[in-house]
Amino acid sequence: MLHEGVRTCSGCGASLIAKLVLKAARKPVVVVSATGCLEVATSILPYTSWKVPWIHNAFENAAATASGVEAAYKALAKKGLIKEVPDIVVLAGDGGTYDIGFQSLSGALERGHDFLYVLYDNEAYMNTGIQRSGGTPRYAWTTTCPAGEVLKGKLEAKKPIALIVAEHRIPYVATASPSEPHDLIRKVRRGLEVEGPAFLHVICPCPRGWRFDPSLSVEVARLAVKTCFFPLWECRWEDDDMVLELTGPSKLIAEVPELKLPVEAYLAIQGRFAHLFRPKRMEPLIRQIQADVDANWKLLLRRAGMA
Ligand SMILES: Cc1ncc(C[n+]2csc(CCOP(=O)(O)OP(=O)(O)O)c2C)c(N)n1
Image 1 (tube, rainbow, N blue to C red):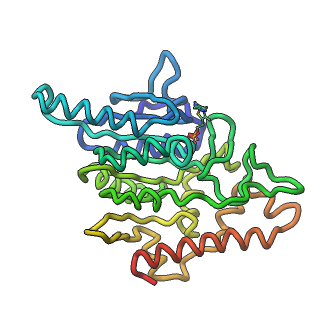
Image 2 (cartoon, rainbow, N blue to C red; image 1 turned 60 degrees about the vertical axis):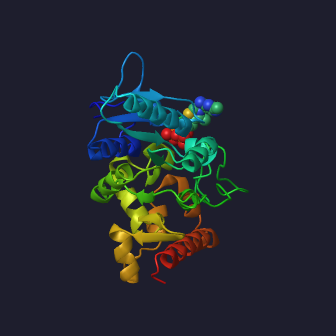
Image 3 (cartoon, protein in one colour; image 1 turned 90 degrees about the vertical axis):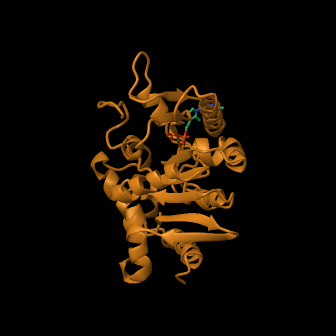
């Protein structure tokens, strides 16, 4: 449901994710896009790449727009003017979700609107030139947290957005990767099926911003999962309990811990982390990233009842 020849960069994770999300949808679907790479590259006047109804809104209000779309369709259905309410899917980047759009997202989740919010997380504001966001991981280079003599990229850790969203106690939250398309498609379907808000956090490799060869996009996403830098899980609430389950390769790693690769395998193939390896190896910083990964992984294992 996305036309061929989308004008995203070659190897762009966002267009791959959008394609998989739309493939997964079974009912008529309306897409809401926050300002960002995917929106810009798919709507260059006078063209559109969307074969489905699509609305572009400002950077800060994708979830508010989706709430209005949902309310409007529900009103039409109530009046008998349409037979069924379509599925409503938001596609937004990390800047539009972790940072500037967070207030509209949190409000819409609290009000309980029925839509699936897909965060494609390329870990920086890519459309405007690779600026840091709340989703940028520690020690990654961006144009606003450069790596040089003094600073070594972003000093702060990545915000745990999916767990923060899960604490809104919405019916369904999951993470996914384009390297695991079946897992991703199943989660999109689950998110669309539940009554109320659903949130899908997808790791989104960006060859331009992460500085790797475009042919490696899916491999980079795969390594994010295999190193537990980006574990795959899903969660729902039963009464007052969070029920979290690891899925796909992450479930396997939880069962067979020797399969967990060192995070270096993921860092070393990306230019945004090159300063950790050249001109000399920054052992304490690499160890700090590994410690971040291990701590997050341990927390998930505990929440999944596997540790
Ligand atoms: C209020 C506001 N501030 C800044 C901008 C400029 N702007 C447009 S897109 C963008 C970056 C989007 O980043 P992200 O949400 O991570 O999506 P990506 O471009 O990486 O896909 C920015 C800063 C804007 N459109 N509106």
